[in-house]
Amino acid sequence: MNEFINKTYSVVTYGCQMNVHESEKVRGILHTLGMHEIDDEHQADVVVFNTCCIREGAEDRAYNNIMALAKEKKQKDKIIVVCGCMPQQKNGKYDLSKSKAVDIVIGTHNINNLAEYLIKFKQTNKKIYDILDAPIKDMDVASAIRDDKINAYVNIIYGCDKFCTYCIVPYVRGREKSRAPSAIYNEVLDLVQNQGYKYITLLGQNVNSYGKDLEEKINFATLLENLCTIEGDFKIKFMTSHPMDFSQDIIKVMKKEDKIAKYLHLPVQSGSSKILKRMNRHYDRRQYLKSIRRVKHAIPQISLSTDIIVGFPGETQNDFNKTLSLLKKVKYDQVFAFMYSKRANTPAAMMEDQIDEKEKSKRLNKLLRMQKIIQLEQQKKYINKHYNCLIKQKNGVAVGITDGGKEIYIPNYKFINQNYFANVKIDGIRNHKLSGVIDEK
Ligand code: 5AD
Ligand code: SF4
Image 1 (cartoon, helix red, strand yellow):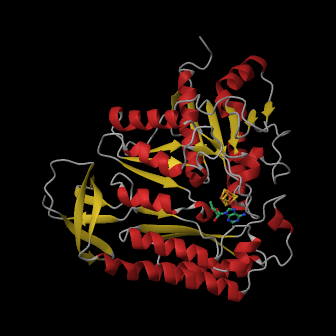
Image 2 (cartoon, protein in one colour):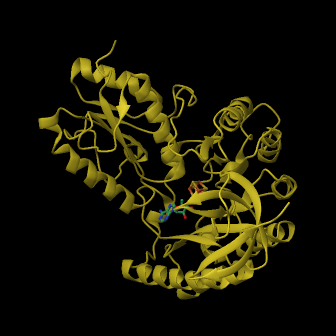
Image 3 (cartoon, protein in one colour):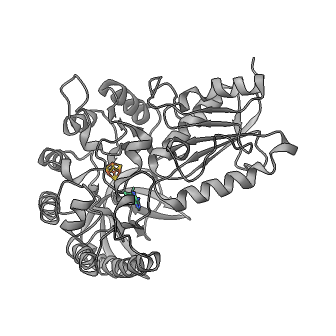
């Protein structure tokens, strides 16, 4: 018996897919205490804020929301927990070590101890502040409770060893640590064969480094091949790939295996080799474009997306124009673009030639406007092409979802079944929406 049985909780998540998945693990842990989830954090007995610090805006948002909720704490006898990347930073913008607003503060390495921390807090009513430098327990202890019933996130590697000069991740997530291949295989097997998942998204800051730290001889390409031996109607996605380690073997496996989604997120960050060097990315514009050419040649229907940082220190108009010209060349289906944000204690924060915020925002808007036009123009290229899609029902209409997440409306489809894969031929565009028909077998 514990005091949390039948109490309610709510989890508020900021940041990337890694955090979304970690919140699923937090839910798993709170369920083991006999608690149940409610959507409204104002009503919940325990509120967990799973935070992000990749950019200043993410931190500000989390901090302001934590403080706003803390005001309600006294009258409602709420427990507020903060975990994730924000408290893990050293000398970050917000110091929660002394703040009375929060009851339990942990970092990225000790989420698995959350149940113990909660019980201890109930017994002592004393604030707990525990930030570790490395994990003490295997990250696999918690089993996730997933919200999404179609796509399941699965961790394959934690941490990052790359140290791009702008990035806080290696400092808050620690060194690369691959999960055991058998643990990954068993998790995917269960998700596909017992729980009916259609997409498995393998997660890591840098999935291509998978296996480098393991004794077993395995790399990312062989891991993918092993997972494709699992029987079932499902597909595998993965993110994020680092262009430096994105090898020919991976392209080969992607091409060969029908179970691997024809979608690739390959963050370029900048189109200027000078800036890439300052970012410590270990590739230049030419090498990046070579990888893109190779993957497009091997898999013509590939859907591509990328991340861009505008206004990195020292980025001139000329450098920025190179990023624009790279976008025109590659023609991504989706671009996630961000203004450079100074992160404490990272090398780029100490660089001279910081770019003015107004200028960054001008560049970001220009880039997004241009990319929108590219995407609209791109739509025409889909006409008369066939894409393998997940067939779903949306507002009473059938839609096919491509591997890249594009929706194709299938107006004349009589619904018998949904959530299965089929080939769809795109035959038109109406109001910027694609329409198509399912290929007859
Ligand atoms: N400022 C702006 N964007 C950043 N990213 C990482 N660090 C920063 C930063 N300091 C972006 C990169 C990365 C994505 C997840 O976030 O583009 O690929
Ligand atoms: Fe950050 Fe670079 Fe690692 Fe990505 S590869 S998490 S951008 S340090």
